[in-house]
Image: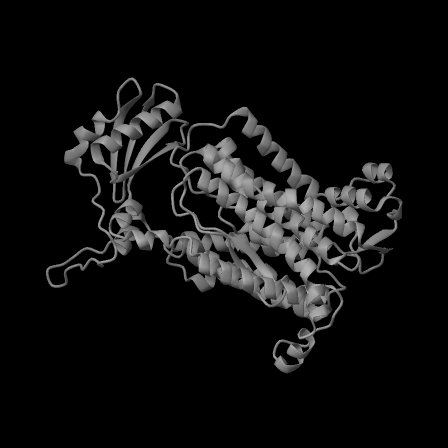
Length: 506
């Protein structure tokens, strides 16, 4: 019960930060009100659990109606307070007056937008045989060039990019996108990153990776995951505030060693996942930070790891490779660790406590892939009435599967969202993301463990940041890899069909 309410608290914090980051600048509706509406289903579920206990689940109709009402109310409040483009421009760029002139911060470089008087130079960058410009629109922070594409998209982007750089230097980033009418158009936006780099000493630029911070977070996460691993191994630890008692228990090296298998297994999976992103980004010469772990002294011992990319993605090919590299690298490490952990796990009988997220009594048939790997590792020991008491390494491997599945969900800025964006384009990816959210919500009606996950994805923005060349399509080989990644997601989250269970004799 305490774990559930702690999870709701963390979910509430994550939701608030998401709302504040995504919509605070484009609507006048208070952030706290939007947050409260988004959290209403989770708060309702918490209240039901508090009143009736965890053994009596709420009616499915109550959950569905709360999600429906919450979604409609959120959209209504958002649109009611939505700012017009002029309001947004006024808020972000206040006009100077004679009595109170605008003062530019010294540290923020000033990027001069393109002026109408430079339109002739701009048109000369678009040869009629490559891209015939029909209309140029001037926006506060962008210039949109619409017309007819007369050659291959990749050739057009590269040639026009070369012309823009020859004419205007590094003043602009050139973005190539598909319009609603399926006609591609070019967008010029100020290259603020280049301006900042010109005003930043080289030594400060080289501090981007911050290896000291990465190592500090790595060490802290090793400690927190080891503490959680000790409890997973069956050692009961005193509360964190009982410092003397906790130190007395942990002063025994044998106790700490019991927590290392889980800690090292989970950190290896998360670290390799992020290194896949990092090394692929470096391959495309994209500026990025080292992987940073997030330590917490409870729950799993960590909230995972992340990298930050400080350069725009050049094209959909790079977007695809960087996005798929993390889940694939993490999955390649997860499988052998999980098989070894399953082979050293205990087989127990299925009881009422058997749940998807219960490592002491896990039913492997909750996942197609988990069931197959369990049968491979345990053989005839695993029967139709068997559950698993997972070894700490198996717990880490199982969490690796969950991390892989979560990242492969084709929604928004998750790795799976990037993958379908690169495969099918931005507009189709939005449709796929919406379908995926609805399907997961329907799955949550059957498998309540997916409910919180479904709620989080339901309010995750579907729009992904475009690559610079967001028009040129992928090759067939990458499309096949993308489809295999989506197949991997399906075999992780779907339960084992009875026909396959009969074949495996489980």
